[in-house]
Image 1 (cartoon, rainbow, N blue to C red):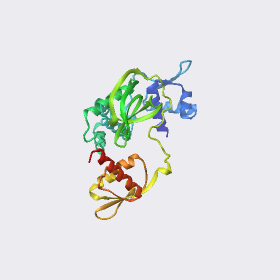
Image 2: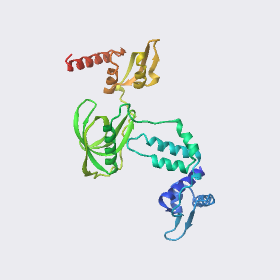
Image 3: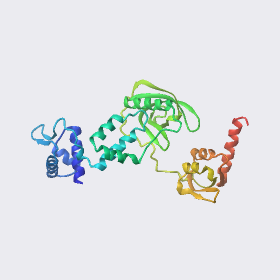
Image 4: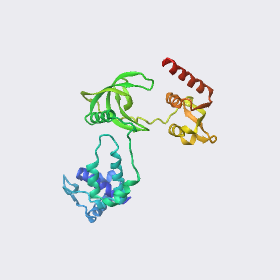
Length: 307
């Protein structure tokens, strides 16, 4: 506990260069005497920290001090490097220079070995230059606090123009989204990048300071009326798709040729769309109205295609 506090004190001083003892005591909810002991411990460890009294007094860190690698344990060094390596998978973010400098600062040989156990890649199997360019434009708009405008296709296939104050890029499940305040709906919204068309960054600055932004994908409440129990059968040649779309706790071996999905799921448009994606590789045993709805949607699709 004490070692964690010492490290946090050092991080605060690196960031602010000076802070009063009482402010540190309040921040860590400890006594002034404890803070003085911590400062002494930092000094003994070779950290150039000192205190002054008077009007502008406080706890100081010597100018131009650079964090010594020995102050960060090997395990934490590896975690820092792993987090930075993962950033390389985000489009248009180049971490190469920073990573190489940290590898030189830390134990290079040891940490190279520790980074080899995992690889992260957010890109699609068939990613395009357009997707990467859109990501980069959105990133710049967020950093520059600029308003954006685009045509958006919702889950029902309806297209509308949106004017948005962009706040954050989010990777959720399999896709990138931009989260921001939609001026058309007067509310916060998530927009999937794949459904964005005719994007442009407007020559307008975001005027409002958003202090309380809701977590975009947090929704612990599920309407019981939207929950249904299903019994579905799939041939094992589409097992990869079954495990991709359904939680493994609901998947069972029916026999040597079939998998069964048995469980309670949320009945929404995504639910029907995912079932339609299986085409003829699905047997709906329960409930029968789901089977009827799938038939209706297949027939409607055939009619729209003129078949």
